[in-house]
Amino acid sequence: MSGSVEVRQFLLRYEGADGGSAPFAGALPAQRSGASDAQRVSDDQVRRARLAVANGALGVEDCVQLLEMLGLNLDEDGQAPVQR
Image (cartoon, helix red, strand yellow):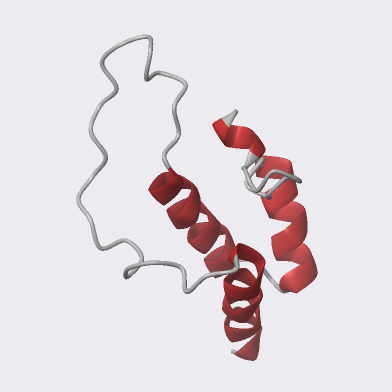
């Protein structure tokens, strides 16, 4: 299944880094407690969401479209819309 390898390679180029540590290596995220961090999405959550999208994408174009629809693409400032 070369499509998933192609999508992973695309994500590595898209993020401009090695992607960090192994995907899905951590425990479940902690429950958000206050209103101040209710809107905060961490960089690690965005990275793991991108990897999950790449895993399910049918190809590079599908991955790009899904990332944009979910707000996981990077804007001009290098920040994902989901983190604003």
